[in-house]
Length: 101
Image (tube, rainbow, N blue to C red):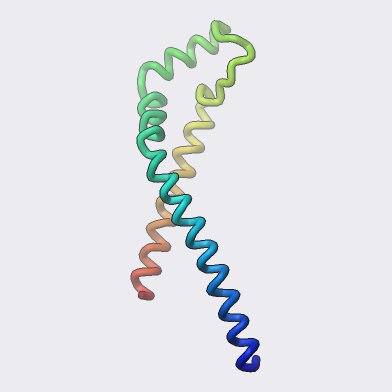
């Protein structure tokens, strides 16, 4: 690779890195803003109200056209699992970044 090609190549890496980091920053800001609502969902899922709503659904007391993914045991559990995996990945990447700084 000659000098011009190297500079062009590095410029592409710089541009791509800036783009990805800007998107990551925005995603982290959105994630941070969501934390309070997320905790509200977790409190609901682990509390008595969720079970009451789940039982009402099982008894057929809720409208057929009501979106009720939140009453699926798997949907919220899968979200919890995804959040845990993302948190672990963020810690791994942060550790790598600190070690290589």
